[in-house]
Image (tube, rainbow, N blue to C red; front, top):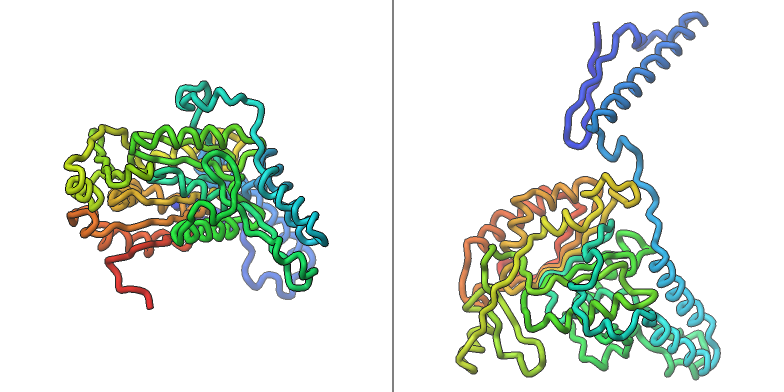
Length: 430
């Protein structure tokens, strides 16, 4: 007669058959003579051996999960990331011991001018589109930030800002040093670090930067943007040159503020193959013309009323599921050199109404919840757009509000976190 032991692994149910003769009675240890005790010990050893053999057999069939294969290896930062952390630590240490105005001037130089110097790759590369340079533009990484609706790259620069440090002098220090304290710099698209106020940062920038900093530290307090591969998705072809210049500047830095950077230009998420993107002229003077897949978007209506026209372009399409499979090491277990467990995915979504189809697709594929439930962390910052802005209330919008969003909250566990802006469909938070 046998007894069946059942356990669950990776969502699969497995059964191990154990001969009853190997399992001693519950009360067999009471008042047993030494010979019986020895028999009990030998039985337990045999039982353990059988269980181990069953696990090894399952492993050979390729059915074991990461939990049975062992805990994930301790994440080791790249040389680039280590150099950024050294720079950050040196600035913080120097700030803590500064005593003179000259000390503060030196710290400012360290924090602003010595953070991310350009390497010797050559300025001539700035005029070359990185898409046409040799090399693979998609890197497989355990820690990934995907920016849907990159625009001019503001969110990517805010993400970099979340890892910068300043030097504020405490009241316990010499009073003459107080005027020389400074906040963390802002990373500018030309690769320079400048005072934050110089470029008119607004509350939305600060909100995302603070959120990103919190999410990275929540995942690992020792981490910063330098540990993450960053991918931007932007459909507006008029912004391609600026995004590629930013990409090239970041890639040329040594050390670089990011592990890897690539912008997918003239590409949209939340659309269908063959979709057109519409470009408005309402913001052309400030160099940031808006765009949307929705022809009646508020900015496009303003553009038609003011300029009498809207420009239309055909664009490529992608999905959150596609980018997850392409970029996250979790889906590349055949490569033993990379971390396949305990991945971290950060997603920023500001796509002028396409957020609903984008997130609905991630539910349809079941990749997002499945990824979160397998020991990984997902943090999503989403900016919603109302029917009043889009000029239409779509089926995808209603499905997301009434079905998909509740599903994420109910089924994906506490390792999938939604941070929502402009939740027009909910009562305001008091």
